[in-house]
Each structure stands twice: as C-alpha cells, then as structure tokens.
Length: 422
Image (tube, rainbow, N blue to C red; front, side):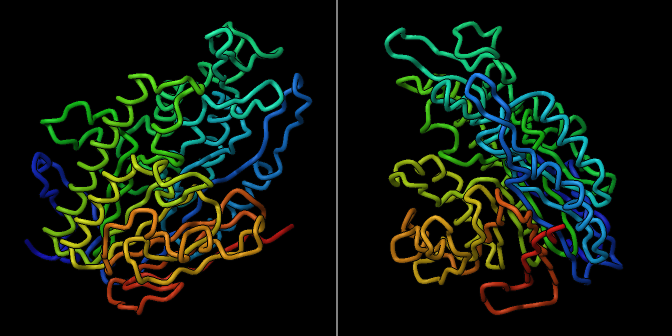
C-alpha cells in the first residue's frame, strides 16, 4: 500500500473490516501540522434538590457558550475532542440535561468527536442518602433488602418517583447517550464535518454485537490515526456494584465484559490500520484515568488491565509514537504510565498542595500496573471540573520528532488554554 499522505482514503486492514474505508486527510494537507482542541469533565455543576436543601449550581453551564466561542475563534483549530463527563457526580442524570448539552454543542463550528464518561451513564445509579443524592440514582438498604431511589419528594422505593432518567440505570442511560449523541454513526457533532468510521457500521462480522458501540470511532488525518473507545472512569463499571448492592449483578458484569472485549477489538483494528498504512503516530482517546487510585487500592483498577495490556502490546509492535488522551481525574498531567523510569509533570492538587504526580508511589503511575516498559508511549490528562474552564491545544506535526518533555512528544506538542475570566 502507498503511504496515507498519498491517498484520499485508506483501507482498514484488520481482519473482518477489509470492506470498510477510513477517511483520511486530503493529499495536499497530509504533511501539514494539525491542531485540535481537547477538553473534558465539563460543564460541572449541581442539581437542585429541595428535599435535601440542595440548590443548583449552573455556573459552568452558563460559561459554556463563551468557552465554545474561544475554540471556534481559534483559526488554527480544525477539530475538537471531548474526552467524557458532560456533568459532575452531583448532577442528576436526566433527559433534559443530556439534551441541553447536545444543543450547546451544536454551536461548535469545528467537528466534535465525543467519547462518553462515567458520570453520564456508568455512575448514574449513585446516591448515598436523601442528603447525599449524588446523581439521583439510589442506594441499597440492607435492613429492607431493597433499593431506595432518590425521588421527587424524597427517598422512595417506587421507581415511578425517580428524579433521574430510568432511576439512574446505567444501561438505560448509556442507551440515552447513544440516542442523543450517536444517532448517526460515523457523523461528528458540531456543525463541522469530519467523516469517521464507527464500530456500529465497521465491526468485525464475527462479533455482530459490537454494532451497539456506535460511540467507538476512528479516523485518519495527516498521517496520524485517531481512535476513541468507551472506557468509563472509576473501575471500568465493575468494582462499584450498581446501587451499592452487596454483589454486582450479572447485567453489570456482562456490560463490562462485553464492552471491554469490543474496545480491545476496536483498538486492534486502529493499530492494524496504522501499521498497514505506515501511519506516523496513533492517538487514543478515552475518558478513564486507568491509573488513578482515587484513594482506593490497586484492585480497584484491575478491570482496566485488558485494555492497558493490549494498548501496551500494540504500541510496542507499532514502534512509532502513541499518545493517550484522557480526562476523569481532573488535574492536568503529562507522563508515561507504561514506563518505570519516565518523569511526570502536572498541576498542583489544591487538596494537598503537592503535584498531582505525588498521588502515585514514587511519583510514577506505572506503579499502579507495574508490568510494562513501553518508551514510545505518552499520556496527557486534560484539566477539568473547575473554573476557569480549560481546553488543551494539541498540535500534531507529522514531520516533527520532538524530544519527550512535559509539553512535547514525537510529532505532538500541546499547550493548556484556560478560558479568559469575564
């Protein structure tokens, strides 16, 4: 095959996907730098809930139009990636809220690619009590052996009273996210146009159930292959049983098992495409910070291992730079969690006054999954959850070969872009 830059389309070479095509940059633009805006974990806020005396916080939502405007007005940005979490863990999962974000994103003049976060589906079940309603789901009460839902007028065992969509059921909320944001598989959001390939239409025919993962997409630009996979933060939707029941249900276990397997297959397809067409780099976008302990033990991260191990293996085979973009843990960070010796830089955690890197033993996230040594890998965690809202200006120059620093890696360089405070 010829190089990507010599062709308008490149073929997916993964087994079972040979009949599909992956849109790429036009030949005239393939050697030029590409700039993307990357953000996530916003807008964060809090739902009003009178029974708990909880008032609404919509400040970030109110700032979102201006935030989108800062990206639209940047002439160098051609595409936008949103790495998940369209609301906080204190915002109820409702049809109206999802629709409000979908509506706000229509004002993007650039093509927007979005991968779902845990807060908009996997964690919608979460609540602790009437006074800690969380995302408006519910909680298991061992004394009554029943789930108590956050109801419109207080805690209730009647699902008809629920404040959140389908009482916070994760599967129903993921279906709703797909309905609102992925109704046309292969089409980006915003008013810009970027043809992408969706797993819904380009899945391996030997795995027909993979067609449900419309949110998993890939595309190629300027000799670089981009891929998104649905990986929710927390524990990959398994270690935290829905509604805090004593043991995870079979539905929850099946969800994690089936989606993770589909994610791995889609990741394999992206790397096969990049390898077969001599791409200069791969960019993987997920929501989860798969190395974030968040105050828990390493066992909490076990269910990310199939994805991490496959990404490590494929990156090693690829030999060229692979960049991972994720959100979830909220604090900006630049590191290589697949290397035992790589340095870490990041912003100061306001809760501790120390660098975010100090969250890990030895200031290295490698210690959370200490099985790998992959030098051609790098990871950037985008800042989120707090104001000023912020996006990452990511430049990919297929002809560059930057040294690894806190803001450069191979063909990539990046800059934090906090929203001006008005």
